Image 1 (tube, rainbow, N blue to C red):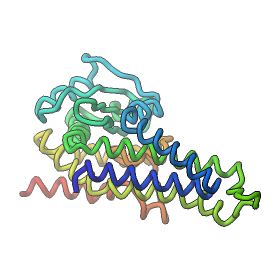
Image 2 (cartoon, helix red, strand yellow):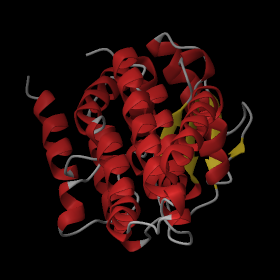
Image 3 (cartoon, helix red, strand yellow):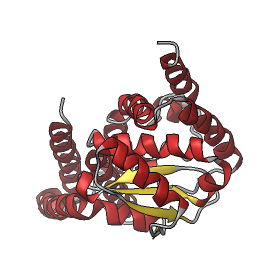
Length: 276
């Protein structure tokens, strides 16, 4: 399935969820409000999702003399991609992601923490992984999923402070309200996470091809995994799927819905390519 189709299905599914939330909260009038909110959110997420996500993490653009930009410039040329914008996130936890609606409007963001713990070969592997996402046109789907899922979570939390539907002056339905508050964020997260796991393996393989070797990325994944447990990132759950490694640990049932494959499996897959 192409990423264009996935994006359309994702927008449709999450928009439908917004309509259901509106209907549960306010009946027919709430559904109309939900529809209008979905239209605005879809428009905004398509055109401005990169700016929204970057602003969530207070990312600052860096110039051509920065280590991050120099590596990205070299790798983008090897991959035949336009030069992405480069951003630094002021966070000690090591991580990185790519965003934007297409390769011509792509941005790559890395935390201060990842720049501190990785050598150039390892950082090159990480950034090549992110450029593989750009080349595969994963970034629009990821960015839209993050933006709309965040909106749905916000609406569901908002619902906790207000009553449910009041058609014909009847009281709200507490079961519908509870389902909206609990299930809507879960549904949004499951939809966005469903698009992520297989793409990480593809981006790992694509990144290894761009970098010319899988060893830098394999070593980087191991380092990031260890360091992120020691210094977890205060990340918005709606954006977790965008990072190269999930920015916080999720045990129990949440682990079943992880946006990333196990890091060990990813490293094994990368190292396996060196023997083929």
